Length: 470
Ligand code: GCO
Picture 1 (tube, helix red, strand yellow):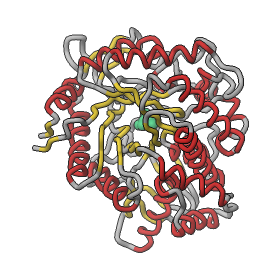
Picture 2: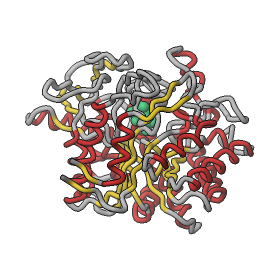
Picture 3: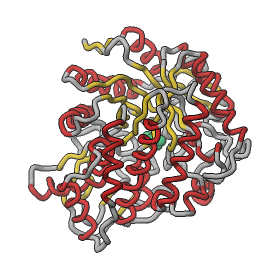
Picture 4: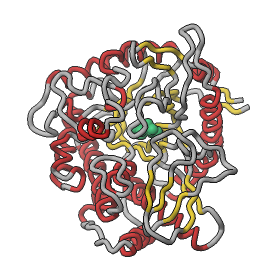
């Protein structure tokens, strides 16, 4: 039996665009996803789980089920419909109401400023690749800190920048859907590190109360064999996905090795090196010294083998096992291992990867000590029977349990982890997989917007009470 600390936070995570719905309501500005999803025609962002109207219900359920923290994000385009300039008071008011409701139920809000949803105007002007947009992000952040300082204690600058940079410019699964543009990808990585750093430095300079951090998607990368070739391919993949971000935000500088691996990817794809100014490194270092916590999102690990040939990227949006292939030029091939169980979306279930990642952060990035697990969960095709029968999601319980054991072990080994957020609090949609990939502790009937606690919600409730993992 293992025990989690007495003051541990048991949270549930959400994101504005995936949960709120109401994308056309109260003067909200457009985001690229609005048109992209319409064009794709696979699913609509409305009504999602209608969090925009149902949040009181979700917070009531959270309190009832021992969930004492919630991750929410502010939609930049609700507050500044064009990304800068004009402010929409109805958007500003919505988040006041939301944060007050959190307080009413004793649920601590962890608030992300950017969760994959740059306003369209920002994105049309080059998104993170345009320096001007970094300044606009800082201004939007400052507005939020001033406006909500009495209601919010925990701030997150950017969610999973790696998912944005690689899906926008390498795999092409996020708008604008470009493929194999490693130059743009790495430049966006550096610019997001910089945007994050500027917000942290401004937060600290202005002396706002509370804590600030960043959330990274840290899917551990392993070589698929002990061969030098596979090891090198894994190091390249790790650089693209992880190292540039951990170096930039936790160390405040890119190591020589990181730079050389990054340039190797660019060279082998005949693409220009990215621009990094000395002044910018100083800003990164200052932010790394002042940042309060790191948010870790972990779902799976990657097993990489060297690959020689042309690129082929097929995205698994079907939920059919074995339908995803990912081969990137100048990097490696992700191997589907038969000895490791997989989710229906080909994500290897590997709790040890989470433990290894937490230990690596402690060892390689000692500057930052405080960690929250800001996302972890299982996408699953839940089966609803009726209102009196809790959805039987035992595979989700097993998944959460096994990963929380990794967390408990890492705490025992000296990693300072203060809380855990299940992705997701309630069912909502997944960016590229739509509504059939459910993650919630609470089942949502998307037609009636009624919520039903799944078996996992009862399990989590007990855990938050006893803190005991069997
Ligand atoms: C999904 C993902 C989640 C979310 C989240 C990432 O399929 O929905 O697993 O992780 O995309 O927004 O921060």
